[in-house]
Length: 183
Image (tube, rainbow, N blue to C red; front, side, top):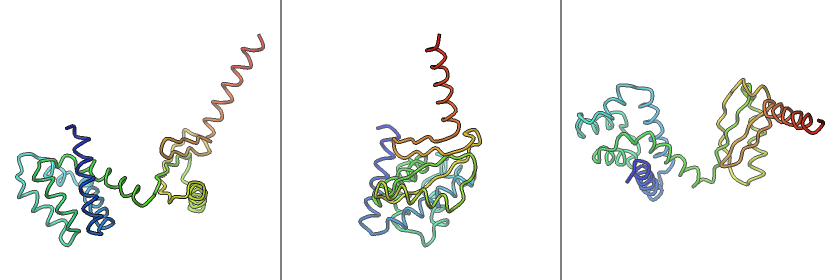
């Protein structure tokens, strides 16, 4: 079984255990916080990923960092440690969060703009999309000066490109076609 499939199995099992225990939000929050701690600490990542460090030591580190944390999360991480799959922790968090979004009927929308959007603009976009699709929207914003102006929206397989860069490219194509037809 490939790493992707193994990660899916762990994510689904952890998700179902958390849902059954009524701790989805707490498990998600702890898993996310632990992933962020690993991303921010080379030492923690080195300990968790080092195959020469025994499971008991890794579990002790997890216990110290998550004292009072969600028991489903801690049990899930301990299982992953026992099965020597700690290298999957980052992907596990990502997959778990996607399962949670699906459960809560939340659609992730990526907005790319040339400048950071004011909160009222972001809220207006969120409301229009929520009204159109009947689901909650979680916005992830990226700023890229190369799109010049306008927005690029991406949710699922749908891309709405109203950037100035795209409009200029469309104009360039039309002008090129007009020159071909006039000869």
